[in-house]
Amino acid sequence: MKVAVFPGSFDPLTLGHLDLIKRGSALFDQLAVAVMTNTSKKPLFTVEERVAQIKEAVAGLDNVSVITATGLTVDLMNRIGADYLMRGLRNNTDFQYERDIAAMNNFLDDQCETVFFLAKPEYQHLSSSLLKEVTSNGGDISAYLPANINAALKKRLEERQLMRVKAHNEKAR
Image (cartoon, rainbow, N blue to C red; front, side):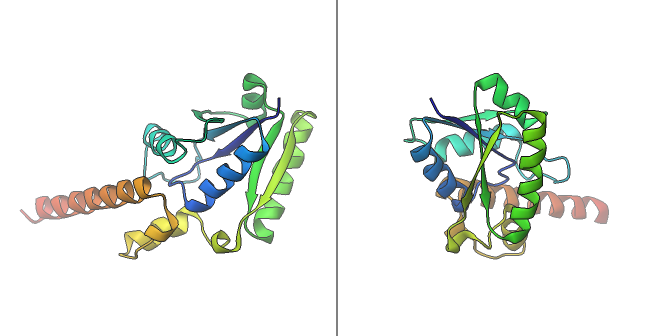
């Protein structure tokens, strides 16, 4: 049985991510989407919120599960019996970064095989960080997000804006 892990912070999950998940689910018998914490990023959604969002977005892909994990990806792979690590590549920068991580993972566990998927051209310019930046400044990014995640993102940004207004009003008193 071919079991793969697709790790990421997925804050938020984009249509580029979803495309990779669909393509991976066709290649592997089981695909675990692992929601990880990236300590260098400030998340917009909690891990639990991201898991729920992704589960809704992948509903209907029977061989896809959504899990959380911390620590080394190779340790996660060993815990769930995965031999494949799935990663997406948008550009040369991604390739260089992911190549180095693949080499380290293989050093840590020589059974870890990284499989790279090239992003489709319409998604090569996307990153969750870019989409958050655009939408926080009023841009419409709905064409790049699953509908449930687009709605959650709009709601979260409205909540944050309301909190900023309330904080400003408190200071003004």
